[in-house]
Amino acid sequence: MHPKWCRAFPGHAEEVAHARHFVASLVGERSCADDAVLIVSELATNAVRHSLSGAAGGWFLVVICFGDDFVRIKVVDQGGKCRPRLCDVTHQEEGGRGLVLIAACAKDWGVKDWPEGRSVWADLVQEDA
Image (cartoon, rainbow, N blue to C red; front, top):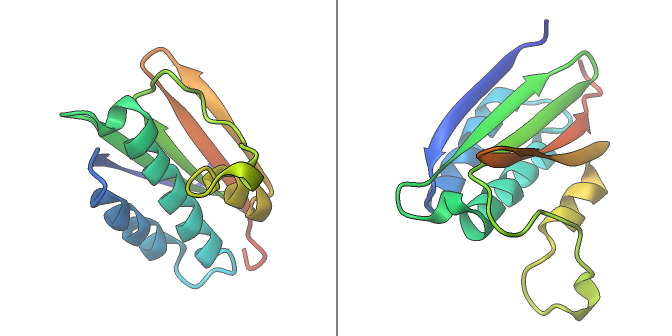
């Protein structure tokens, strides 16, 4: 059994900073700490901006799980019309780069749809397990 922590946040933009602090406090000095904070920042921002989590009364959930040689960061949101996907950022002036950044630093990532929302996760290599 791998250790797992989770915390729910109100669906407000200012809560993204609290999500970053939550993950930073758990990953500590691990080699993947900076990438873990970047990933939760991007995923939480996407949840607030692009899902029903950002609507009145909305919320998002951050889950962090430590495996033998990986750290998984997952953000669960309340879903919406658009499914998260990689965008061609060469033609965009602002935005659309979050999943590109995540794909660049994560070992693997994915999206799972739920009846009342979705989760987006990313696995990071933990070299100092």
